Length: 381
Ligand code: TRP
Image (cartoon, rainbow, N blue to C red):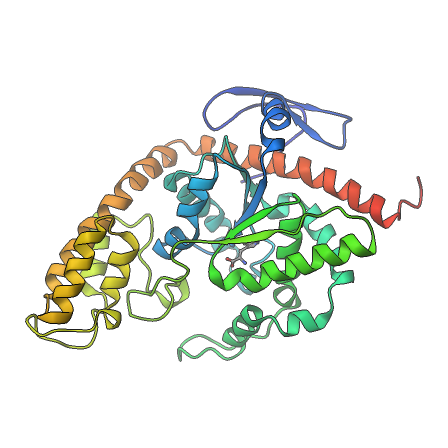
């Protein structure tokens, strides 16, 4: 459904203002009037953020507490690029319908969570093929050993090759999967980002980006800032089954788009710690309901009281579940409303992607010109 933004059209941005898009020289540089003025006057003085997500399905509370919530806060202060990393889903090559659908799911979730496509740029990775190009050059300066030692990559490859849940089939690791951290580095360096807000599991990739920037700058020309990671408030949220991580593949998520009834049901049936009578004291850290209350209940004094009671004389899980249900539905209700608004106006959603991708492409071309200049491989010029 999306297509690369054409260079000579009139577009309407996501809040409805009209911007004239004009080609600068027919081939390079998409100039978006209005937006480009703002880019020149305001955003270019702001530090730049790049962060991304892989389009594999709807987003859940783990994404929100670990990342999205942070992005929403940062968007007014920084020049933000939010990337839908659709080059990096090689393990879903057999199910591209899912990827296609997830691109829209993610965009809707972002809008629902409060990301403003007029302030930050929503970028579809594969519509900015400079990502692939930069990946290739960066692969020159990155030793294989640094991928071999990357703990996140190692764990993910092992999960593909030797799944432990008994139902997932073993898979061979595609080369694209092995090099996805290099592409992630390219994602970060392409807009010459200063900051990368991510979940804790992504830290090895940010370290890789810093190392790559240093190496490239030293070997060729100092183009790239050394990006810094920014970890969200809740680095890892447990799943509703008590598993260490909320994840789609485990089916233990509460999704941002879940209805109030679905949330109530998931909370009612979620794992609530080892069996215990209501009047029996329990250990807070053994009950994931508390992990969620800690993550999402704004009434921290009340959570503290509940914990104390729980440890001293016991609190029924029913009471905890009721509290959690209302806390979560209070958080999610405004998102549901925004989502419904956008779902009823998909052209606006499409435009968010189209405009953001246009801006992402413009800066990508700028950086690639710098990279080619640094490598001095413009043979025919
Ligand atoms: N690998 C990240 C994840 O699985 C998603 C991602 C792709 C990303 N490109 C990025 C995150 C660039 C930060 C920066 O969550």
